Image 1 (spheres, helix red, strand yellow):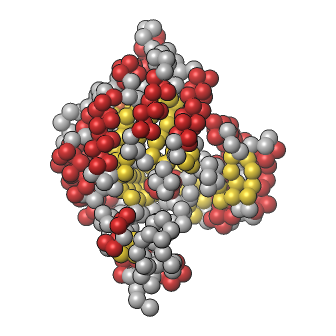
Image 2 (spheres, helix red, strand yellow):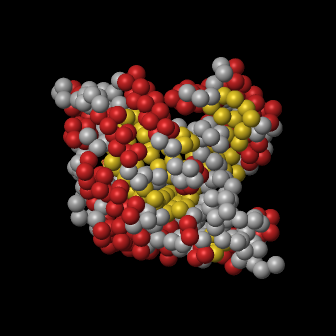
Image 3 (cartoon, rainbow, N blue to C red):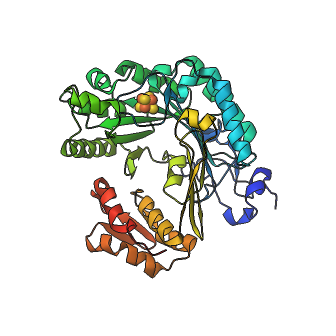
Length: 438
Ligand code: SF4
């Protein structure tokens, strides 16, 4: 049997994943598989632009490793934002890349094989075309991305220029996540965003025309949004060449500038009922337009689910570099989670990361809770039991309060939230996370 050289580096048992067609193509489409189950990207019209020479049979959701890179700069501070960033219009890209390199060296990460890469922030596009290109090229030099399945970069709409898109495409980026939030001028003003709706629409169209898969973030339930603005936002997003939509309810942490604006009477706190209605409307409109509501806050065209984010809900380990970035590994003895220091100064100054260890029971509870975010796939009870050395009876016991309240349903190994319970995922979490059985 011929072996695929890329595949054989990471997966010794090639023949176990043999397939009869390119499983990422529609039935009848795609190229004939190589014996090891990979197909040549160059002969598959849907995947011709993928950088690796081979296209993998999609591995299980829990397989591989994800890389997250936190870019902690923004060109201005949005009043609702609690993320880790500094305002810097001329960020020192070289210093930042040097700091990432130092972290990778100290943690002995060089050469590690990554299934997905996600460059988030902050505002990665604030690094500019040259800065982003040099960052992604550095990641390609430091990690084994020979078989990477998805490379995503976050951008603000006002930064999307032909030069930026060319730099991303040349660097092998597949996916652009745009912080649109709204297309409405009044909502954008309330949120303190710089772009306007036309800029956002043009950014989506330009990115899609360059072959990038576009994901759009929207914020639901903004207090004092004009009547009809949310309906218009949803109508606009489904009219654009968007593959993926993330819908977040506005959430205000105590120390963000929004709270001071509330005290001065210039903003109001979000109303949970208003937000729930907005989130339900989003589901109705997006599903009617052909999107799959596959995760609590995520909608995708069929086959366009975010591979990187799916790892967070599927026991797939991840490595985060940069300030505040988290890493996690899932082992039989539990979960090891590492969180880098918050703040660029602390990170550059070498402050230590926090390391948290969860025992196998707590790890299994958390894995079930995260898995329940997946509305289509659900939590895989058998996979959780295997990973953490639990019995299925133990898993069923953990889920008993949720079953008793009719919040979840079982379908073999898969446990899913009941329809409409996605709005109450946190409440389900409180019911299953509380045990102290480690
Ligand atoms: S919302 Fe995004 S662009 Fe605004 S401050 Fe936060 S990270 Fe920066």
